[in-house]
Length: 196
Image 1 (cartoon, helix red, strand yellow):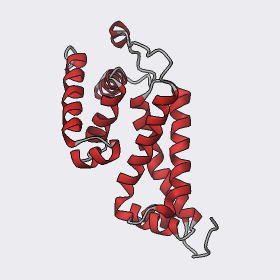
Image 2: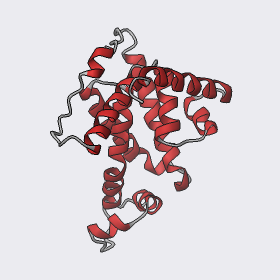
Image 3: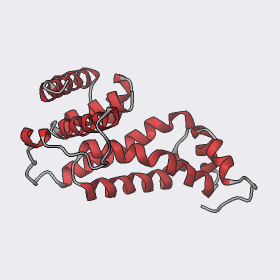
């Protein structure tokens, strides 16, 4: 992709909405693609951090998703479907990751370790620390879920997708999606009951 000389400054790109950035990126505007990557990379990283607890794998999976997004941006027919398209990429990468690591033994999360979480931010006791600790507890609880429950609960609760969209992304029936989300919620409630 080559950058087109449109004379827009960096701050102009920051003011653009996602759909406009996607359209510009599809026309070969490298700066628009760079801004798009900046906007989505944190969400993708966060999504993968809820799917696996291996830090290096999270970074690698994030890079793979961003690369696939950048390479495939021209294949997106309707820019309004960008979020669903990106979630599909993320889900497919996660499924490939599961298949690749299927022979590895799943690491059990020790509930006692959940109680020993230390906040690395070093903040004073208060709301921010409590939120940070709670976020770590939720992340650990989600990671402990079976893989088929992890992806659906994150697509529903973190990405806010409809059951129908999740059904398409995961290539499962609507009933299966609803069942898995219900099971994931029950398991998370059980895991976190002493904290909420």
